[in-house]
Length: 279
Image: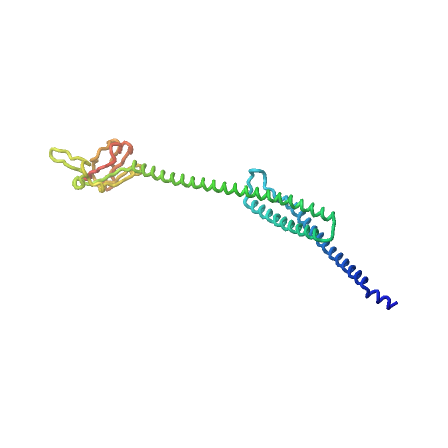
């Protein structure tokens, strides 16, 4: 019996059957490992899809034309980017599963339908993400356009402000000139030395501000502000022409006179040069 058993084990047919059996066992083990790996991958992908569905609540851009804050836009971009990366990874994994199933000896219509269903879901999510990315790009374009418009308006406002300042300065300068007058005081001799008084004698009257006189001898004043002029003398008279009712003299405790302009408009209406002779 022992001899018979030994002969059977040594026969070619036995060895062939044994080899085929071992191959079948190995193939079954490989198929089981492959199937387990596929199911694990599918489970992970389905878990990711569930997470994406939950995250869709945070992907609202708002109504058309409605603005979102920069912080909201940045957070939305991050969410969309993370979901897009997850979808890309899942689609790559699914492509590997398809290839594995195609090249394996294992055939399962149920598994194939599951892969096709998940692929359809991933494609749908990918389209939704692509649409969101396009909408975000439009929002960025609107924001950039608004920024350019604001910058342009700011530049226009700046130019307008600069022109306004320049015009204001010009008006102030014109107004200052319109309200500028000049006065001088001195003795008759001093005024003649500056050619402010000319002529005069036994049979002629002296003339005021005729010909070339020394303009530097005059003091410029703003007639809106200066209505009193100290004369530092006990006697004085106006040699230029001004209405008598528009001014008066007063004397302080030291006997020195001060000219008071009582009606500014009337006083300066005949000229803007005031010549005062003191004695």
